[in-house]
Length: 143
Image 1 (cartoon, rainbow, N blue to C red):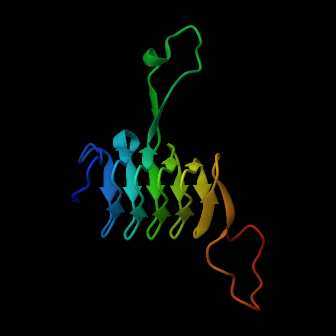
Image 2 (cartoon, helix red, strand yellow; image 1 turned 30 degrees about the horizontal axis):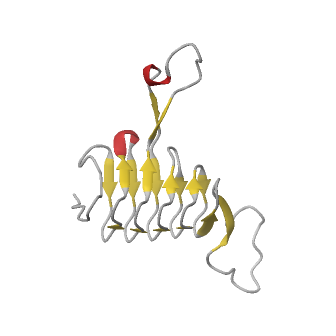
């Protein structure tokens, strides 16, 4: 169980969410847990962060979008992540432990541990932790 204490934090307590220990969620954030949200220990989120675990279905142009339903997909935010102010995390996103999401980024997809994620759409700019010296790393196996 977790207690969310901040002005303007909107969540549906107990609905589809697991919040780890020592997690900080900034003011004016929105967590839509209908599709499931998991936030790892020691993660911090700046003000105005939005996390969506569902999206509208809109493929059929002959049916009003509001009548086509939703598609739900779990969001996983690993331990020790930092989500910058006003970033948006979209449904189905998986952030590995130690990821940093830049302020204002819009993120969807799977990101490796310690990725620095920037932009719209969110992309990995670089790995947050330098590679050890004199160690051969197989391309594509690390951030």
